[in-house]
Image 1 (tube, rainbow, N blue to C red):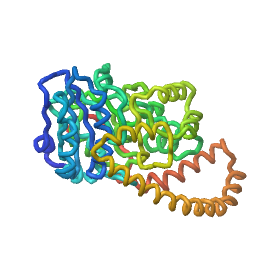
Image 2 (tube, one colour):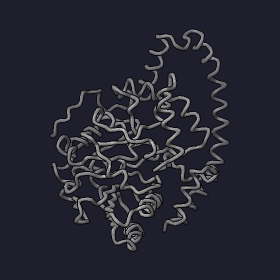
Image 3 (cartoon, rainbow, N blue to C red):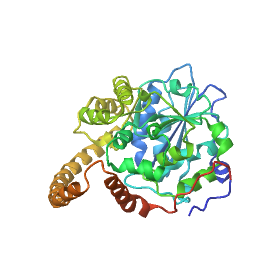
Image 4 (cartoon, rainbow, N blue to C red):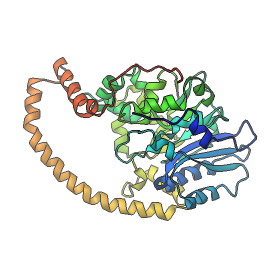
Length: 385
């Protein structure tokens, strides 16, 4: 169970104040570990490249053990510009003390965005960006949008909603049975957020947010936390503000599983993206020669970390080639073993029957969800602690 520091401890230790004495300064927050600094530099470069000379840009990185050399290399990117500042807030010790769950390649620093309201007492509003994306326009256009009473704004997660629209998919069961969202088709991707920090502070403290984050092992971690905690208080942004990069085949598969109106919005966003999001380490896949990959590498070439990014991508391709062949053989073997059982199951419980739906739900709950819960589901109150 979470053992948080004294209330206000994170703000007192790492509190950030506005760099520019300008209420119209654009505030951009990112979070990254030392390993992700090279990709974060690409995102920062894309922000700088499209920045207006008429505005000031206060870029803050919530960092976790980022080396002094890497900090210096990132800050040097802002030196030629009088209107751009790059600063760091080391949140690693606080985040690591909270006992937060992560899986796969995710780093605990992804939870840093939950600290924003308390950490940034001097700010009313901010844009949050993941480190694995490229901004294709002036980020001030997003920062200037009105939230109309909502606490934050984001873009629907098209990939997640495509899974949700697939019968018997694990994410369909997860959202309905585990997250219990009232409006599943409002599920957002938290890689791009516009946050009304002042209003969030009135309802939540950093301690209460972290306690809630540590209360369960969330499958999609910070994203699930934000969805369940802020449901009904989230404004949906134009889909162009967070376009998930992928191949044409992947895009078509997603679009065909979305409701017609969302599929139309999704396709339109792909034609005119404002932010391209390379989620899932797509910047490491040199073998995928898509338009989106070309955009990433165009910005990466102008990053001070270009050689590191390229070396990692080449190593990843070699590793992927071996893994892919091995996994293909294993998958084929699994299919042959499972085929008789699947045929028998489909015969006894045909698709669409209520009994089959219940069995599928129970299977996912016991194998993937219930075993990973730290506490049983309990209602949440938004009262500050």
